[in-house]
Length: 195
Length: 195
Image 1 (cartoon, each protein chain N blue to C red):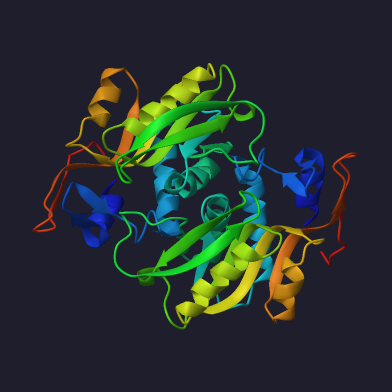
Image 2 (cartoon, rainbow over the protein chains, first blue to last red; image 1 turned 90 degrees about the horizontal axis):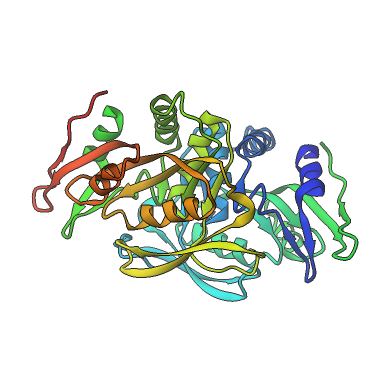
């Protein structure tokens, strides 16, 4: 997605350790006009797929999922990173190792909001080593629901997550795939994709 | 907002201890069509106000803020509940006592995304004792920005938060104000508001 790649080149900041900061427009401050274009693009890419619900994980996936869901006309369910006294009853649960925060989270979703046979589009801001995505996929499958597709805003193509998931036969659409980035020069190279 | 009140009566669950669970349509599973109506209603209520940015707090405020921001054509910034290695540089910080989780959070927002003189609309899902809102207001004021208004989806009118904020002269628009609720019967009474 050209508009997104240009925005990442303009406002993304490359840091040592393969960190790309996009908190000026995606995951701290949010450019809601850009997110609307992102939602439209996911709808274009997954048009014709059966999507009953969009699933994401708090916190930075929520805005993307909510705006994307408007284009699909479906609800969102977001997985939560810790047990809350406001979530009652039975939950599906998994553990996710966070690349960003270098810790392990318990991640839950209420059994009331994922059902057997539902077709789920999983949306997230980043795909790097795929740990978070594997956790979300396991929650969907635990419910007997189907991962219809995975929509990623920025995939770190130099890491293994995307490749492993595609090898499993999952359909992943990443709007921007980073081939390489250089923390010294700030240069970011994107993988060529069909537009 | 009649549509919201009807939805709360239909799908909200009253629990002992003044807990109202709306996680089937607002803060775990999200009805994005309802949120779109909520965003429209905030736009109607604050039409004519100068709004440069919408601020909220993770996680359950994000979807509401993002969809509302589309109606205003402004960005969102969401305050974060813990220091993250992906947030660098200086931050505004405050502490918030959570009614839901019965603990104290450090809440931060990057100085890059709140500026002196900006007019901020603060959006959140609930207003109860006002602790979270007081924290967000203090972050805005620490930046030298202006709290132009506060938009709440559900205000617990039997608690003091809304009254105290209105006494400070702040403009608060709550789409549904709960006058009383009964955990035994499940009955919810809303305060009459001009539609």
